[in-house]
Length: 537
Image (cartoon, rainbow, N blue to C red; front, top):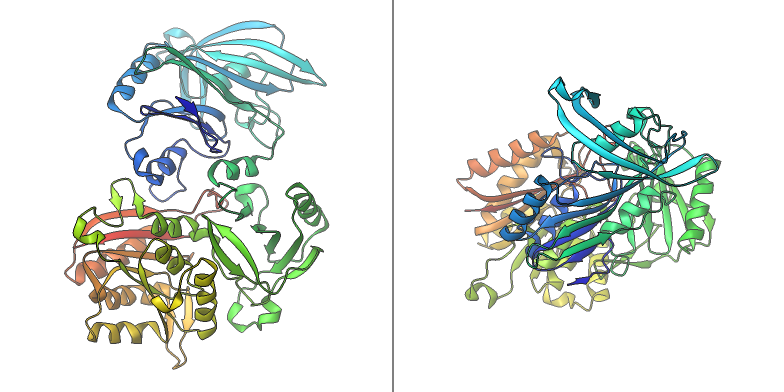
C-alpha cells in the first residue's frame, strides 16, 4: 500500500480510495443536474473506480479525509466499523469565541428543524450524538479545537460546538462569525484495513488560510497536465458577475462592467502567486454578433502582452489560443472533461466509448465533429487513434484546428476538414451513406449561415439531432451539448429523447455530464452547460 501524489487522492489500493476532500464540493451529487460530488467525479473518471461505494460523508463546506470502498469486502468491513463505532475520527476546527473548558464531552439527541439540527434531551426521540472536544492552542482571539465524534450524525460537531458557546468560524448557520470558509477539517481517520485487519491511519494537513477556490481546483486538476482552467466562476467563488480563466501564462478576466480597482488587485496577486506574465479583461457583450472582433477582444490590464498566438496544455494536449480573435480565445474550458472522455475512451462508469471486441479494435473509430470551431474535440479523438471529420462554417477556424492537430503531432491530411453549413453537409453525407461511430453536436446558441439560415438551440436542436442520426452507426454514440441558459436540463433531455424516439432508435446507455469542478454550481450561479452522452441502437 502506498500513498499517491494526486491532489485529491491520499491513498489507493485494491480495496480503498482515500481522498482529501476540498471545501466547497459535495460528497455526492445533490441532484440529477447539479455539479458532481467527489464520489460522482471519481466513479465516472476511471474504470477502476466504477464500483466505488460511499461509506461516510462530509458536509459540502467541510474538508479533509474521506474513504470510499472499491470492493464488496471493503464495503462490508467499513460499513460494520462505522456502524459499530470502531472508527477513530479526528477533526480540527477554528472558533473566535472563548472556549471555557480545555476538554469537554457533548451529548445530545439531534433533531432536524428546517436546514438546521438542534440538540434535544435523550428522551426526545432524536438520534444520540456524542463529541469530545479538546483545545489544541489559542492565540490572537482564535482557538484551534480538536473534535472527536463518537457517533456520525449530520452536523453534530457544528451543533455541539455552538451549543457550548464556541460556534465554528465561518459557520453562520449555527451562529459562527462570517469567514471565507467553514473552518472544519477532517484531519485524521483510523480504520482496520478491510483486507489485513491492521489499524491504518490516514491524515490530511489543513491550512484554513488557504484560498478555498484554488484548493478545490488543485484537487481536481493536475497542473502537470493542464494549465488552463477557471480561477473564478462568479458568485460560486464569491465574485458575483466576475469570471477569470487561467490560460497558460495569462489571465482572462470577464464581466459586464469595467474592471474595478479591488478586482485588479486580485488579478495582480494571482499573477504574482502563480508566476504568470499578464492579465487581460473583456467586457461581456449581450449582443456579441453585432460586435467587431477588436471591440469584443480582451484588453491588456496588467503585465506584459501575450503574443498573437500562444499555446496552453489540457490533459497533456496542446491548443493554440489568441486574444485578438474577438469573442472567444479558441477553446471552451468548460468542455475539458468531455474532451478527456474522447481522449481516454471512457465516458462514465460502465460506459466505454468502444466495447472491447477484437474486431472493433482492428479499425479506427470514425468520428464526426459538427460545429467543430478550432477542433478541440477532434484533436482529443484523433490523439486516441480515431479518424475524425471536422465540419464548420468558418475556414479560419478549421485552419486553426489544423494547427492544433500539428501541435499534437497529428497529421491533418489523415483526417477530413469540411467547410460549410452543418445541416447541408449532414444531408450530403447521409446521401453518400457515410456512417460514424460517434457524432458530436456542440452548436452555438445562435448562428447564421452564409445563405441566411439561422440556428437557435431552443428552436432547432431537435431538427439537428434528426439530421445527424442517419449518420450514426448501430450502437453508435451521440454526444449532445448546449450552453443555452434558456433551456433547462429536463427540457433539453426531452428534446433529445423525442428526436431519438422519432427516428426509431433506442437509448441503450445514457450519461448526463455536468460542468467541471472549476465551474462550480450554486443557487446564485446556476448551471448553464448541459451535455449528454447516448449510446443508441
